[in-house]
Length: 454
Ligand SMILES: Nc1ncnc2c1ncn2[C@@H]1O[C@H](COP(=O)(O)OP(=O)(O)O)[C@@H](O)[C@H]1O
Ligand SMILES: Nc1ccn([C@@H]2O[C@H](COP(=O)(O)O)[C@@H](O)[C@H]2O)c(=O)n1
Ligand SMILES: [Mg+2]
Image (tube, rainbow, N blue to C red; front, side):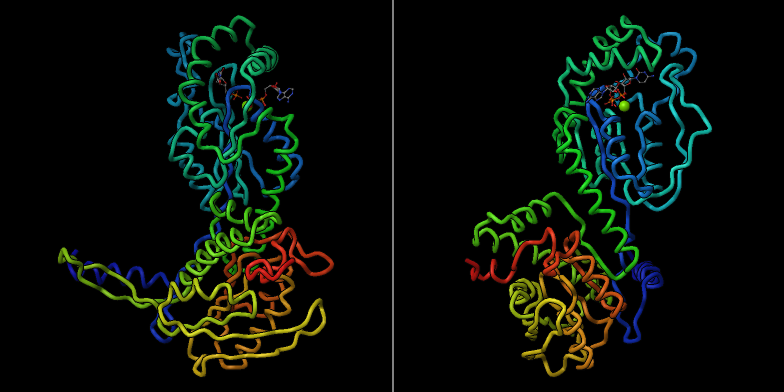
């Protein structure tokens, strides 16, 4: 790339990002994308039944269901003449390109038109229905976990499992009643293409599932867990829309696994520290990603020019004693020689919080501050700590508040009072209990981390 192209490229990037008065470029916020759940499984395993149960129990218009059936290719008259040879369970039976483009549009906040599919005429039938972009998209169908491009759109992958004899029995019953078939048609099609394709394409896709639901719609425990998870996601989406400065680290099942260990009351101190440290490191890295940067072109050992950026240097950490101190090592590991200040606030419940101790860098007003506290509960201590930083001259928009978990109540309190500050957390919990403890939470973080609990 010549330097002119490079400079045009840099200017193009720069023109789309907020540039501060000091020339620093602010890191862009990723768009808040919907949470996509894929539900696969063999025919008549109960996919549609499970999805309908989830949707009716959620009773929330922010959830939308998209069926892979709507993307079956319509059969031409020639193919229709030999429909008994046609394999409706092969990946090629679907217009996956169209499905991908519809899902991409929905993910990017655009409405799409989706046609219905008629299992009797084997054709897509118009005019279809308008699907609005929603916070949760459930994509259901036999082969939704088969294609890696479709899988990559998903945040959660479910496989509905059911015994194959039961599936065949249900299919015979359903297809003779609802899909205009007779028993012989169903049995022939099952032996010729449904069963072989299940074994070749559908069953192997089970390995990609994050959650397997044995016994389909009869498995109320699994369905309840999924509903709880979706409710938590909906609450999170609501808060992130309300407060654009709240950033929740993208949830992966690795992260959920770490949260499961850290939150589990049975986890030993050793494991708690190990997994809390992993989560803290992620929160710190994510928080650093929100700092502004300056551009810098460098030359690589191959003689090529690389349009790089330089980290923001005027940084400091401030830990809220004691649990915030658990985050200091991760910050030091990421930012060599970083200055770290401390604040101790005392007080419980809704009664006034008191500042007991503070030790902050003398030049803190000219720095970006990473405020460290693993748990944001009521927000009372956070408000006290942030007010102290502001009284020292720190610019509100230069504060990034790093947490592992945050209660919605704490987020409301902090974001309403300090709309320019950024909160970075790895999970938003459900609520606070009457003692202002985060629920489900992880208990007294400091005690568990430093081993001072009983
Ligand atoms: N748990 C269940 N108990 C009894 N019948 C069920 C159950 N789950 C599904 N069915 C029935 O089995 C048939 C296939 O279920 P469906 O949800 O359409 O499966 P899929 O979408 O996986 O093909 C339907 O007629 C449905 O009513
Ligand atoms: N024209 C068609 C299209 C599909 N099928 C069968 O439907 C099954 C997928 O739907 P499920 O609700 O059972 O998941 C699939 O196994 C196809 O064989 C069909 O028979 N005719
Ligand atoms: Mg179905």
